[in-house]
Amino acid sequence: MSVGEVKAALRAAIEAARQGRRVFDKAVSEAEAATRTANAVLSDSQHQHVTDTHQALAAAKAEVEPTRRRFDHTAEHASDYLTRLG
Amino acid sequence: MSGSIAELVAQLLAVRGKLDAAVVTALRARTDAEVALARLAEVQRGSNDNRLRAAVTDAEVARDKAGRYARLLSEAARNITAYVNTIAPGAAPTQPDDAASPSGERVVTEAERRGRRADIAWRKQVQKADDTEDSLKNAEASAREVFKFFKQHGDGQGGTTSGTTSPGPAPGQDRPHVDNPVTAAVMAAGALAVTVKAIWNHGKARRARKRDNNDQA
Image 1 (cartoon, each protein chain N blue to C red):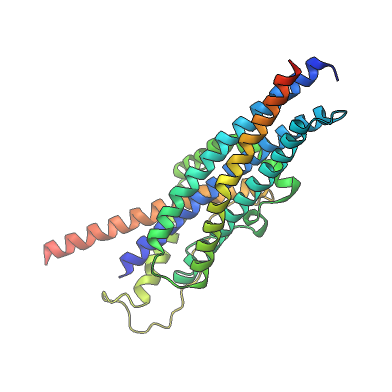
Image 2 (image 1 turned 90 degrees about the vertical axis):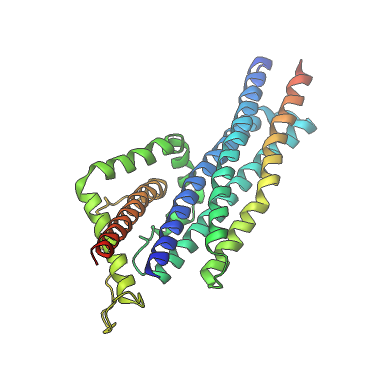
């Protein structure tokens, strides 16, 4: 792989990571809107399916920030390496 | 009372539709992470740089976490479907099992190929169902079944007292068989949108009729 090819691959990786972050943010806002409605509508039911729904949505919510960080760090670390190549 | 359950069902079906859309979007993000990872892995061959190694690890974790996020959302959607069918049997068409647990290379490949067009496909499906008289008729029939069920079970507004007639499942949508989980999920979302709309229309017409009757009384 020539230096030019390495740089091109790194730029493609950085762009994919940044796009992934934007797309993931879109998924999060869609899911958050659904979660708000679900919480409001299902607030007084103790049914197992309802409990499981809340649990799955809470577990999904817990993944949001760590996932965003990983997308951002992918782009940052790849950019650092690209800079180092000059 | 039946009205409030019908509203609850409509709201839950709308939530499920939104979650299905979010699953497809999250899978698109997963695909982006996969693309980033592939390019980084090419570069990494023959290099021992710490930053590059960190970038590869980050991309792997981003891919796995985006996939986990999609799976959790679809698990929530699956439970909502089950709950809707508990409070109003037959009101929520169930999706194929594998559509509810998007995992594995096949789904990711399909998401890559089709995911970017998923929003368009979703709108097209709704449009198609809107335009197709038969589909709409089916959806309206489903809505009528749901209302019939509410009337038979503790409606309290002149419902029957026999209460022994168990409601059959609502007539299914005339959907073509698809063995592609992503397509199935997208199509299910489209069919749902139409059903929800039909339930609302039916409820609206019913309330209007009731108002007319009250006016005449």
